[in-house]
Image (cartoon, rainbow, N blue to C red; front, side, top):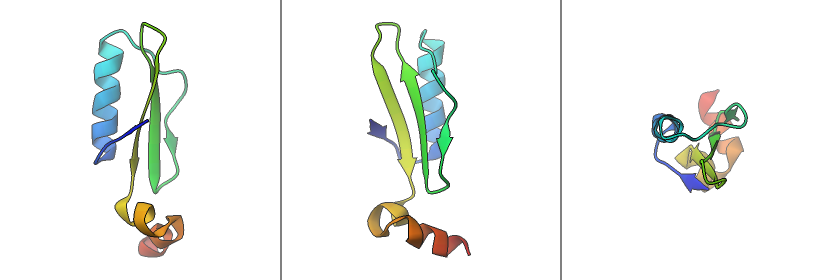
Length: 69
């Protein structure tokens, strides 16, 4: 898995992979504090790209949820 700095960076990486012949086997997973997408490349490799909110990464998902309230 490769974690990137923003959700937009995750989407951009997937768009590039899809344009190069990869496929996305299932829809994105969005937990609010964490966002993940998977890409299967033409050679059969599975790549996962994700983003996690820095507060959630450092302090746990509950800290992220408390920020949203």
